[in-house]
Image 1 (tube, rainbow, N blue to C red):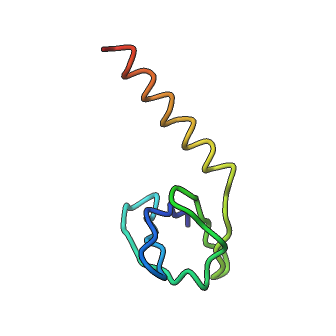
Image 2 (cartoon, rainbow, N blue to C red):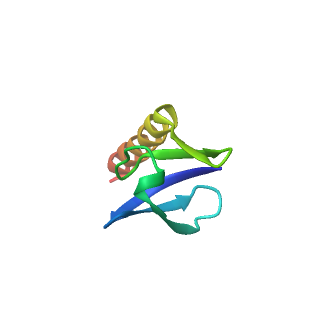
Length: 72
């Protein structure tokens, strides 16, 4: 499963399931070092960062914003 780090609240990261949109708090102690907008993959009960997926998602968002700006 893939998750986006929605935000950091105290000692928890609020992770958003990319497929369902469900948000879940996860203790930062069991995660790699993360920041908002990072993408995490959960495999074998371990979270790992997916920097490639993060960059692809950011690129798509920027492209959408550029298209919206051109329409105005």
